[in-house]
Length: 446
Image (cartoon, rainbow, N blue to C red; front, side, top):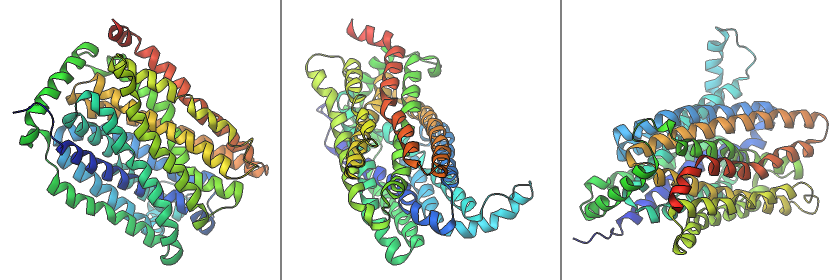
């Protein structure tokens, strides 16, 4: 039997791509409806920040357990459970006002009366969504490691990770239209129901690596390669004692918040700066997230250029990430040149968001480069928790900054300050990663 992997691995990659598309489609609905919901329920920026923070907090804490859960129950069953939970959570948003009103008396029992019913209801819905969505990336990265050779993983990761961009593109194409004609509640229900369609195809099409006869020989080859890489770079126990783990954690902590800020706050930014809302934001967001799709796939492909020149996989990955970290500096131009046209910040932020996706494809693949398969989901979960905590910090700061400068009739300056961090975060994170991996890189060169 040939040791060459069969094409079935690309079917697997396609399933991961569609799962990630659904993941981000569900995640994006709230931000697209935020201007309308803010007006209907009289939310402040701090209220909206608290709603998004609950999602990020539950997502972050669940990521810590999600890796262990996926390792324990397996990728097929774990993925099915995760997408079932987040699809239910997505549909629950339609009933947030009623849930909040029902739950409010419970808060009164502990002396908390100041939370509006609508805010509380959306916080409950976001919590369930975050609980389920936390399983997506630990499962997807582990599936990729099981079915792809190390040299293909960044490209495969880039492909399935581009599903985030497709989801972000499909959301503005559909959600504002559904909300305008059928109401915002229907938008949440219909988008949430899409996950159950994916579950059907996952159940009948996916075969874990150990069950796929056509792949069995190739998987053995991949496993041997994994073990050689892992033995050279990480200790067998206590993964958090490894600088490689902390390199991934640092990369997630400093940069995940930038992507989440763009995802959750861009519709509100276009409303605050250019009075654009509803169907008016469809074209700018489609253009912006189309750029991110190119970044995701291109970022996964970039290290292969350096590998062909004789670089080791690890060195090729970090060199690529260094170049990618420079591109978000374009975000610094969004506000100074924003008076020309709203297309200036849309394109500047689009290139910054594209860089994030390119960065993310390589950052995730560092884990499968440096750790054996039985630790991958766990490390991805720990890093995801760190990224979630960094995102919470940025979200809370942004909400308070925007409310402060909105009261001063100068919200533009508030966005300027947040954009500065978004622009420079990747360079700082790259230096941290280089410092933490200096011994591994030295070994790779030698």
